[in-house]
Length: 219
Image (cartoon, rainbow, N blue to C red; front, top):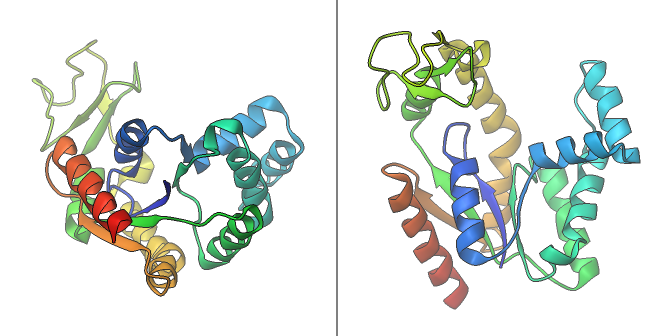
């Protein structure tokens, strides 16, 4: 299957992408991983991306599209892939359509993870990270530490990242609504969008997604 995963920040896209890719035996291709891989390997596209990032500028669409095209051409993606974070806007979605058409394939589904805005803010703004080990993550509501502000695992100080503040989260949501959400309408016109609720336990959301993808594929 060839799937695009969309949803607002805090919808759990990364978590769901990993589970779905494993269940479907297809690679999980995330924009973040593409950038890290190209930059660390010193590819031409990686060098271009780094130059923009070092200058504090957004990486142009053509660089991101180039990275995605190279990754989708790898042997493990021949029978399908799950795209997470790409396409990020309608221009990228149009470029992806052209890429796939050139290869004689097409998308099977666009999975839209739906989460109410207030829940997104609650999920992200409540996150607390350990200063000693960023892999230790807690949440004031869903996974609180035994002692407030102290990491259960190592005793380090827990803090809220600047980009997890409520004000920043709402700004990120505004960017999502303006730039990324229009691709849902773009793909809906192609009959590809499958929308599911991303509320509840991770395993329940995964099961819901698998069922919805199965139904859309049969349809």
